[in-house]
Image 1 (spheres, rainbow, N blue to C red):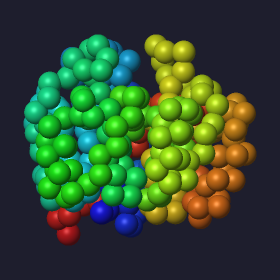
Image 2 (cartoon, one colour):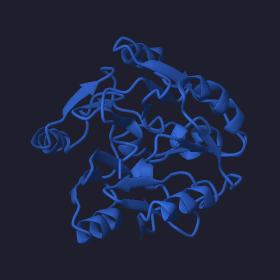
Image 3 (tube, rainbow, N blue to C red):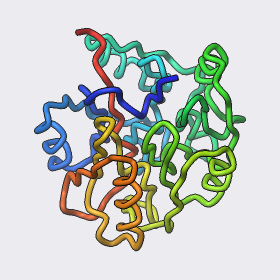
Length: 249
């Protein structure tokens, strides 16, 4: 299985929270990557209504599942790039856990999420691919986990760490907090990052304030991944940098 969050080559497209700073957009575009800003959905609270990982879920075949409220927008934006956008079955709602049906992630051949709320299109696809489905209590699965490669990640969620480690995945547990998210005490590190190639990870800002900065950098270095800090501001959770590869070429 191809992990949709681990690109096989440098990504062509990055879907970015429309509220991200112009510096973040410019830094990504300077690498020859086309950016697509998100569209706000009225289904979610204002502070996360533009987070791509709340409304979109990339699939291992290169397609994307989108929540019904934003499907038309992303279909129009991505169809010219040969990327199929499947309409999800689940309408989002403001309250947890009805806000997280699309906040799904993967490691190896395993779909990782709170499975009682996962959108049916995603579950059907997982069944067709014979993927293992791993249930965790944390509905904000993608937000909470930095995908490093096919079998490793970084999280501040002790429950995710325990479950994934028990499955044989190599996971670095870090202290929670130290990632900005307007409207909340703090955000998630998974929402502040995204692989732009197999060996390069973009971060929305620096990790200077994070007490585990050097552990994070060391872990990534061991995996052959370099960090690219898009700004000199402290890192901010923008709902993941979702990278996609054009299929129209």
